[in-house]
Every structure is written in C-alpha cells, then in structure tokens.
Length: 213
Image (cartoon, rainbow, N blue to C red; front, side):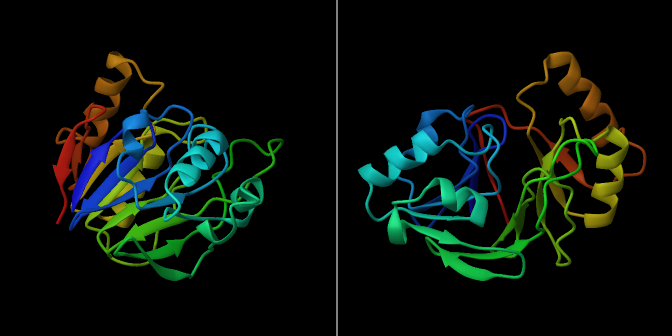
C-alpha cells in the first residue's frame, strides 16, 4: 500500500485504487479527502476529528463510510449507515482494507483532565495508527505511525514504546506543533543514533508518500 501524510496526525492509505483516510482533523490538508472511500477516526480531539469536514465529505460522497468510537459517532448523528461504531477487539473491512481495533482510552494527560475514548487501527496486519495513546496491539506490526509530540508523552516513553511494539519502520505523526529544531531533537533519539532502538525511524513532510510492505 502507499502511505501519504497530510499534516499532523492524518494519513491516507491507497491500495488497488481504493483510498482510506485516518484522522482527518482540523489541521488536515483538504487534499486528503480526494477520492476517499472510507475514513477511520481514533478520537474526538480537533486535530484528529473535524465534524464539519466529515459531514461535508459524507454529503459529497454518499458511498463514503466512516468507522469510529461511540463518542465520535454521537457527534455525527444523522449520517445513518455511513457511520459505524467500533471498539477494541473488533474486525471489519473498509474500502478493501482489513482492519482490527486495539485500545480503548486516550493517554492520560493529567489526573485532573478527564480521559476520552480512543481506538487504534491496525490496517492489513501491517500498519498501526494508535491515535493519542501508546497502545501495544498484541499483534506483529511492520509499520508504526508514531505520535512523536504530545502533552501526554516524553521521548523516553516513545523509546520504550518502540522497543515494546518492535516495528520494522516507524513514521512520525502528531508532529504539527514541532518546529525544525524540535523535529531534529526527536529524530536524534529515535533515529539511527537513538539509544538501542532497532526500528527505522522516518518523517514524511506533508504531502509526501512512501510504499508500505
């Protein structure tokens, strides 16, 4: 499959002419929607989910299907069969991609900040998007989309997460708030110079693509 990054947390996967978009939020380049057949949404934060954009896309493309957790689905009330609720342990097919769902909750930001539901998606048994959590899916992962910058994690957490999931490749996501200096600092710990992380770490600029598998 082909992976294309569309800024911050959103990616688009393409296979056999079918397009699957994951987490098109308020920071997403609108080109991500071009030719979309299905959408996966991990949770309701604005940088992963845009109700306005999803409703607009669903209206323009009646065949578009959206899979997400119950919290997000409630905000898409009225879209009927275009929206399907999913949760941890589920498996389904979306636009020709085989999906399994892992995890249930957003990472803890602070004890005083209420947690919200968050699901991660393993696509074709090959690529995992965890959303805003460091979920270990309990299945082999060839390519991990790694949320490299968030108020709920440290670089140390990311190193341990890469060691536990042990993917062949990791691509940076959730990096929209990093400037060039921050990006280089993170890469210094997670890339080839990192402390004992065998995973190949890469960062795609918005609009860039890579072949997966």
